[in-house]
Length: 359
Image: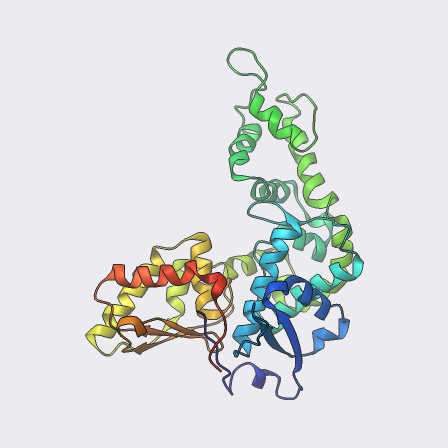
């Protein structure tokens, strides 16, 4: 379970002079519902009161900042699955059922999420965002190849590194063509015969094809809308964009630094130590999932996570996250690190069943 409360000093008071616009999002249809909501250009000047409908057709009780962050996280996860290609970095690709209005709506979600919630989807290709903001001429060959390496599958990166190294040879020791290289090039519909003189040029052309040429239609839809972000220093230069990506990316060290709470008893200190040890054991998607449990977001959007303590025991014992604050209520009855680790791991495994229950 994930829990959320409405706090009178949190989300809605950020827009005290505005009347929140209530919108409904079905948990089973997040992507399409959000695209429909953001089809209206005026939405960027509104504060949204999001009501989530669960799988049974019932409104979830939670409201406020944490709910909106969770919806944004769900939306971008679904977009990356259905509307993009790429491995670590995702590039939008064209679908017949998404035309200009839909792509513009998705761009508005990006702008709204950052301006209102400081949410930014880190899997979105750094190079693609830079192209939208600064144009193709801002993309250096080094930037292009670096992004291409993050775009391709992990198992292909070793082949790419070989192709770009000084030791590249188009044939193996027996004089036969390097099958791994040929297979890699053919996966991008390239059938030129590589050699030491042309391999870097071929790779650069393929990177340009995949990262700049193919998403051009989406880029043309997004660029005018994303331009409003350039009033923020993070979107004024490539260096600023680099810093934004780095600052939003969760690490165990960053998350532990967000924890704020005074442990006044031995039991509280022990539970807090167990929690920090658990966070240090996480990486990648698991770390993002823990952050989402605590804040509603899989990227860093807050300055702190308050830690409070509870005395729940037995079957009643569970960590409770109030994502509107955000705050984590941590039981003090764990008698060992494995007990805490098992409980948090099980919660994260059940992420598809999370809902907002406390108002």
